[in-house]
Length: 380
Image (cartoon, rainbow, N blue to C red):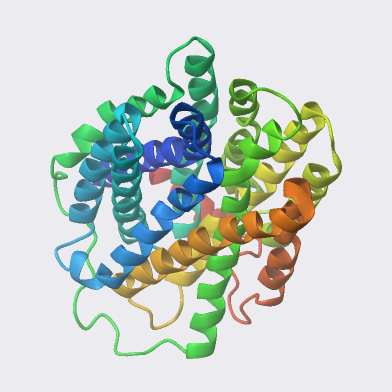
């Protein structure tokens, strides 16, 4: 019991720090472009650093997890803390690039370790809880960046907030950690089922990061200052935090993925149609509420694929996220060149449609969850 609590706290802390950094990255890139007097388009590729890190870690995932998932968590915490420090203090584009890449690589280690540490029949609920920690911390990111920038200091200094909580995670965990013993199963997952579940993670993360990366830019597009846009940008992670805090309760009553997709579609339409900053902010909050459950549910869905070992499920999940993070924001940016940024948010609608069409045919975890499982998950 005590070890389960310790594991949950370690993973939750790491996810909270990562949520703060990733949500703040969009605003930091806007500030960096201003500070260096270069077009924001030249920095767009930096928003894919986390995705590139995920793909790199996914390729070596089974090897990294061989000694247990706590090692990738510890290495990820150290690398992420180093990257946050470098990005916050970077005097030029070269150092800022290094800091961003380190955040991406370290964050990938955290993502790789998370599902491997939170295994079991209640994984979807435990993943939702640590995702709620990430979203709650992410709420503070745009506000902190905007407030510092408005006060005359560089908003990038807000990234240093995550360093103190990450440093204790470098110390090895007490007791044992979950492992994937050899011979746990001789079965192989059905390719069709595995492909469906993996693709759903790609789609879920793609939708999330379209909003995560471009929310602040969309708000600035309404005519407000960068500092104001960064502060208003709290709306999307706030919506996600609310959705994930309510998620464990809602999951016992309704199919959350179809419901979440409907709410996201409403938020995307509002983000596109609205002109004033107030309405765009409200639309982003609505989208955040809908997005909240997609990643935890689809990731747990993958880890529960019959015949798939945890040491393989975690890298596959990281690979899916990495591909989504690299491609989706870039695709939205390319579409924005043709239809303006506000209209580009409609790219999320076909992604949501595909997510619903590819629903697994057996034991879908986006159906209402057994309340008994909810009760058992309280050990987190």
